[in-house]
Length: 175
Ligand code: NDP
Ligand code: ZN
Image (cartoon, rainbow, N blue to C red; front, side, top):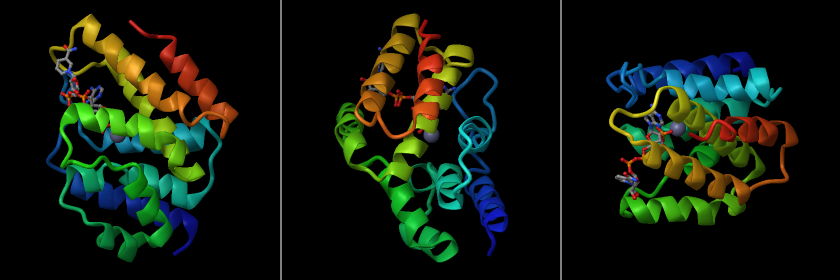
């Protein structure tokens, strides 16, 4: 498959996997808007053209939040994309608070392409928390989310000045 075909295949694959899920905002937006936003941040705002990075962005929540296995990703998109998606997938056997700490600890040790996906994920989630936060989140909780996202991103800096500047701009909207 050529790069454009592979990226579109990943968009459709993710749309199918997330088809019954919604985000946590007031409007309960379709879940797929989130992976599409990551890919758009990377390609449109960040100038990223690498197909494996864009596929990993589109697929980044499939293993964590749907019935998708790593094997299936490898079969459809190859071993590099599988590795990138696995590197941005939380270990769901850990309690929530430990998962949040693990993200901070792991951020420095993932591939450069996975770091870009992680940057895009945090950029999109900060924008969402600022503009369309999960229902019921107090200002305090929204601030805590911003602070945690910053701790994660501070561990992986020095790889992509353009995306890091976009993150800093999103962080500047801290409530
Ligand atoms: P999370 O902090 O994990 O929820 C945020 C996640 O939800 C995001 O990372 C994002 O993940 C996803 N998401 C879906 N919709 C939105 C949206 N509209 N805006 C932003 N993110 C969205 O919340 P949990 O409920 O899982 O709680 C985890 C932690 O929060 C616990 O460790 C606990 O310590 C703390 N907590 C704090 C409270 C407080 O009042 N301060 C109260 C309760 C818990 P993705 O990109 O993967 O989809
Ligand atoms: Zn995400």
